[in-house]
Length: 266
Image 1 (cartoon, rainbow, N blue to C red):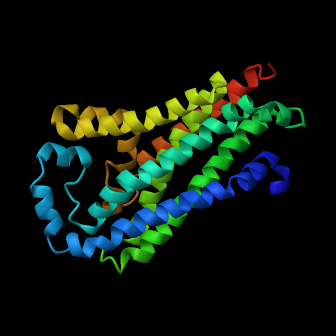
Image 2: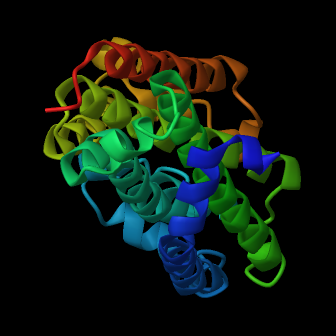
C-alpha cells in the first residue's frame, strides 16, 4: 500500500530518528512525573502545596484537581509537558512539509517526478497525522503501564479519550502550520501560525478559567475543545473531538488548495 503513497513513505522513512527522539522525550517526562504521585499527591502533600498558591494561578494552570490521579496526570503531562512536546513536533513537521521542502528545493524536485500537488499536500498531512497518532498511542501505553505502580486510578477508556484529544489538538497546530506554509512558501510563517494556535488557545482557556464572564472564550480555544470536559475523568467529549479533527481537516484542505494555486517553480 505504501508503494502507492511515495510522499508518505518517504517522509515516514526520513523522520524515524526524530520520531524516536520525541518518543524518548515523552518517556522521560512521564517517568519523571507520574511515579511521584503516590509520595506527593496521594498523601495530601500536593493539596497543601496547591492551597498555598494564589487561587488565580491555580485556576490559570487548571490545577484544581491535581491532588487526584486524573488531575495530576492531566496537569503535568496532557495539559502541559506532553502538550508542549507534541506541539513543538507537530508545528515543526507542519511547517517543513511544504514550506520547508519548497525552500530547500525538494518540493520542486518531487513535483517534477509525477507527484501531483494535491497528492503531495494530502500525503504530507497524512504523514504528520500518522506520526502524531504513533506518539499519542505510545504515550497512552506508557501512562497505562504506570497507572498501577503510580496509583493514579485512571480508566483505560479515559486514557484513550484524552489521547484522542491531545492528538487532535496538536494535529490542528500541525495542519495550520502546513496551510500557512503552503500559502506563503515560508517555513517561519508556518511555524508562527502553528505555534500561534497553541499559544492563543492556551491563553484563551486560561483567561476563561479566571472569570465567569469570560467563559465564552472557551468556544474559540482549541485547548478548551480538547480538555474543557476533562476527558480523563468524564471520557470522550465528542463535540470537542469533532471540532479539533474537523478543523484540522479544513486546514489540510486549505493547504491542498494553496499548493495547487501557487507557483513553486521560482
